[in-house]
Amino acid sequence: LERIGGVAFRSCTSLERITIPLKDGIITDDIFQGCKNLKRVDLVEGAVLRDTIAALLLEEWKNDMNEEINSINQSLPTTPAGGDFYDVGGKARALRRWIRSVLHNIVRYKAQHRRLLNEAATAIQLASPNDVVLDNVLPFLKLPSYTFEGED
Image (cartoon, rainbow, N blue to C red; front, side):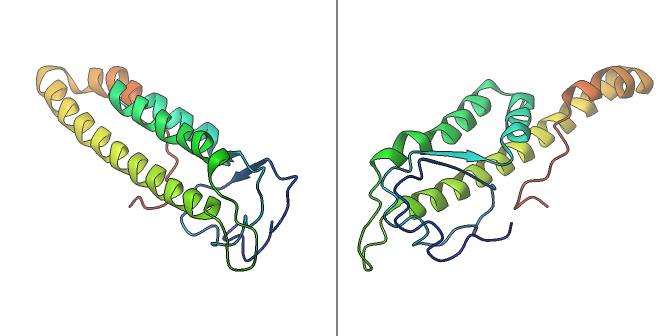
């Protein structure tokens, strides 16, 4: 799924929950116009994102990411849905900002994780036999292999 366009859900008052990909540009401004009951968003990549977060080295990063992911479901219920043709509401804008923020943070934390991992691996390799490091240490420090949008 590349993009959900136009007024795909306009005035769909029965829409309470939606699952979307974690992808910048997936939604347009007026997609949720009039969807006053939309209160919850889940991510298609939810499981792999949770696995990636769980594998991060620092508890602070894990907490920050979990708060970021949960934040949309705290703010969405009170975000205006808009109504008439000229008032598209703020739900789509809030979702787009949230997606960008989640992507930015997970990419940043994964890069920091890799940097710390490389530093630690270098130190361990200097102090231990290479086969011990490769077989017994590094496999426990790896992140899931999923690549999020915006990663190199």
